Image (tube, rainbow, N blue to C red):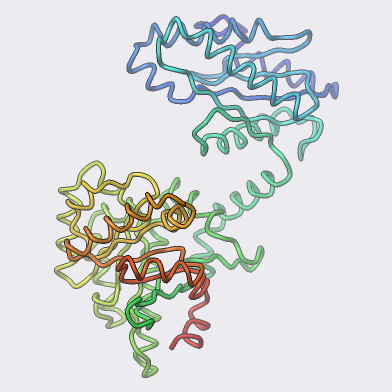
Length: 423
């Protein structure tokens, strides 16, 4: 059996057999994985029979564009593998986009107004980190596909040296994350928050940096998304709360002022069992009042169940913790959620401030002014992130924002440098 039962295309097993033979003979190919975005939606909305028609139509489209010695298969539900005789990145990109267009046009009579969205991961088997390895290159295209899924529009990602390095770092981090935690390789960095009324320091945000003994500094974009996928962010967030408490304890014992520290909290942690009790264990261990700890959450945490989140927030606030909504204005943001969540602080995403400074018509500025005014009426403190210039500070001050945070004051720095520079 070499055929897929639904579409009649080659199946994955037979495709791998042909690919292995081609690779053994050093035939240069562009290996691609074609993915239908939101295929689950099509299944659930239009039904399985219609979804199968879409798959069959895609098979017909790939048959029509296939040149001599090119081959493809349907691997799984919404995945097709496609081996093309292309060696130029530009020509391949144009061809993939023409395939997207062909498929979208061909499926109009099946899906009506719904437009199929597609993405593609690619590798040139001759130029890959493991040339002509069928197994390795099939893995590479899936890594490339994962990159395209981070973007909203139809796109193609070609696996290259930079992506390979990122994947090596990802693999290293995942294999060593527990060891790194135990050996203290995750470091507390602090970025100051400034009171805009008097220009004085009012606290700091805790930011994590991974300083590996083997790899040196590894920035958050290389490991936070991974930890959110595999759940390790729960351990890391508790660890960061502990590091913040440990730092506050050090300041108190050294006769320095005890600064408030904000610590990011993942959705998985905020909704976990015994969450509040575990936080109190940490603050008690270091004899630090919870009033010095602000827990930063994303608005998306509350999208599904505001009531249960508010119950947790009430419990946290009753113990002295403050709650901040982070990155407001970056995505989900709605005034409706702002009115329902029982938060103490609202942090405006840095992109929000960037939009205001670029907006010549002043519309974004008016929106920001309304949000800041509403927060004030709700007794919610406001923080503007991404303050990079004196002009930025002057603008948010005039709009009655309470606090500023950004490179204008300081980049995130080690706890030692923070103490030296600000305390």
